[in-house]
Length: 98
Image (tube, rainbow, N blue to C red; front, top):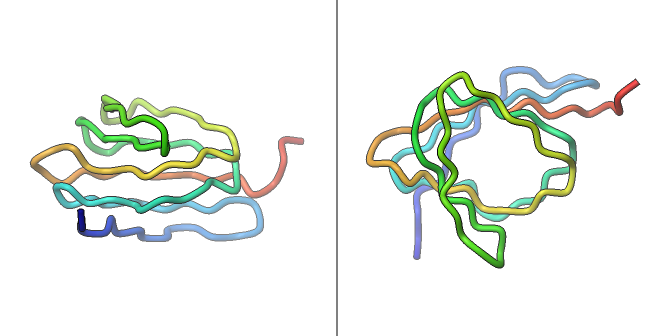
């Protein structure tokens, strides 16, 4: 099944962090990827994302402003399961905790 691509907009990229705003049209996806850094996601929209980890698919319910953290190594495809645009900001930590 062919889906539209989510649109990444890099806001900050330096030696310490990478901050990207992701915008998803209805049904859009990130495509399969592996996170190379620990990261925090800050939803800008309330809604549902379909998470496909290669073994299972689940629906994640996100609330605007309710951030969450994930460790390095997560592998998945993220798909907008809403009938409207969904957006979040992803903050990746390039340097280890000190």
